[in-house]
Length: 151
Image (cartoon, rainbow, N blue to C red):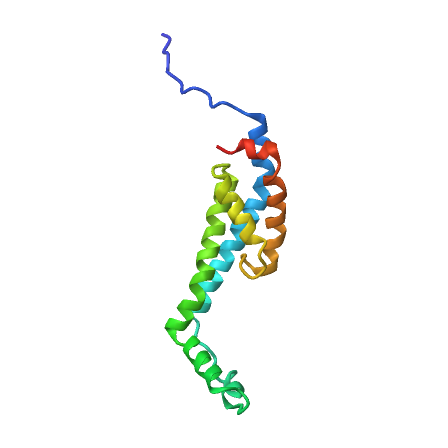
C-alpha cells in the first residue's frame, strides 16, 4: 500500500540571499534589542514620578529666568512628559520595524531608514550604543549583492 502525498514545492534556495541574511542578522538583532530597551525605558520614564527636591535649587535660583522655570514646570506635567517622550517612542518603533525588515530581507528602504536613525546619536536607540549596529548595517546594506538579495 503506497500512499502518495502531495508535498509543497521546495522553496528556491538562493545562496547569495542566505549569505546576505546571515551578514545582516547580528546588526539587525542588536538594533531590535536596543530599540526595545529604549522603548521600555521611555515608557517607564514617562510614568515614573519626578523627584522635585532635586529641582529645588533650580527653582530657588534667582538667576534662572522665570520663562525657564515655567517651561520646566510644564515639562514636568503629564502632558509635557508625553510630548517629550513620543518622538523617542516613534523613532524606536521605526528602528525596530526597519530592523525586523532587515533581518527578514523584506524592505531595503525600511532597513536603510533604521540604520540611518541608529547612526544619529541623539535619535537612535540607546544613544551612542546604536552607532555600532547602525554603521555595521549601513556598510553591509550598501553592497550590491546584499541590495540584490532584498525582495
